Image (cartoon, rainbow, N blue to C red; front, side):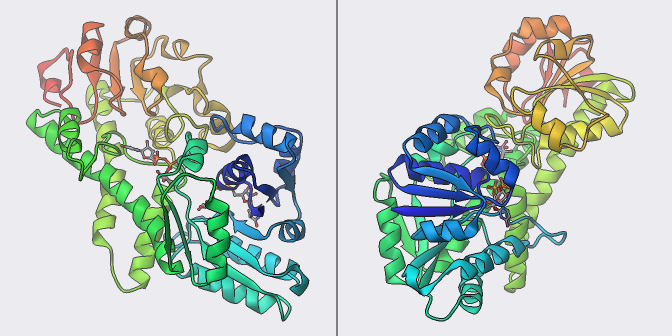
Length: 448
Ligand code: UDX
Ligand code: UDX
């Protein structure tokens, strides 16, 4: 089928490429000329494992092309996906101005001779946005234009977006029009996954409710981690024990510094704002946010307890991205932690396998933070190592080398990546989240 995607960011580029990979002809549109130029030059503007190869392969096969022209996208695509940003506003509600603008652009490019077109909302939006999109297109399009609107939320995780798209757990779309449902079913025919077709409002709600539930799992385990710290229990064992119940499941029960990224923080805020506007103050989700925010503060407290003052102390930070396997530093907890340590006067030297370039470009720490040349030189002469992101490289680090390079062998692991007993055996004094500290040199701190 012929498809178009308006907005070629993380979501649009990966979605468009995977559609091409299963045989559709895809036009990706973006209003950022530099981004489109990069893509036309055969380079991809983001780091996402496996994506560059797929883009190259499908461009060469003639199934994937890039343009800055929305009219070209509308002309090409029988089904037009919208994947433009939906950023949060200061009050937490969603800024829908990009969606509205793109709906108008699509409307202005639609003509009756194009026949029936489907406009699909892929961006994460508040419930009822689809109706607004339909109303807007109807208002700005010339009479006689025939179209349907669909909500088709994405569930891709950065770092494994290609796999999430090609082998999804489920495909969800919502439409109030049978012709649109038929076309959507054809698009997803090549994918082996259960398909749930709903009304538009339910599909819109599924995305916010799913992300909020995952965030809730993370805050739940982080709250339990606090009880573990006070009682001497081990959160890793507790998570394993409760996760073995199939009704609960082990995934998203990793205690640590809390969730970050371009989705969870914004989606939880948005869901709270939407619920409020619909008459239900979602207190449970406000608690999820509260636990997440204070989790970082509690962790910082452990560092302060041990180092006493941070002023003028060199601290090595492993991890800048909001999670592993991405170069994305948006709403990264590791970056926020770095910011707070710098504010307290520490000298932060950071290393990340993919995030240094993006942190330099988009972070707000330039001029204050120092970036190391490699993972181990980052540690030289530092008073402590802080682990902020769950990169596998860190979990597999040579701990003897870590102990050797640090000035004092202190490790604060915000992602519970290391085995405490191995760390202690290698001479490290090791603090993590929800597990007893090991290798502690003074008895007062051992209780932490
Ligand atoms: C974004 C939203 O943040 C998310 O809620 C939604 O689910 C999908 O789109 P992401 O793909 O990560 O997520 O955003 P980003 O990488 O910023 O990409 C958006 C792209 O849209 C950018 O390339 C931007 O240049 C483009 N864009 C923006 C347009 O093409 N037209 C516009 O009017 C605005
Ligand atoms: C998320 C959803 O998983 C995805 O379905 C949706 O489409 C977009 O938002 P993403 O933001 O890419 O994906 O990353 P995810 O793997 O969900 O991690 C989000 C954050 O939660 C990261 O900061 C991660 O470190 C944190 N996290 C995750 C935990 O702290 N503990 C966990 O157990 C899992």
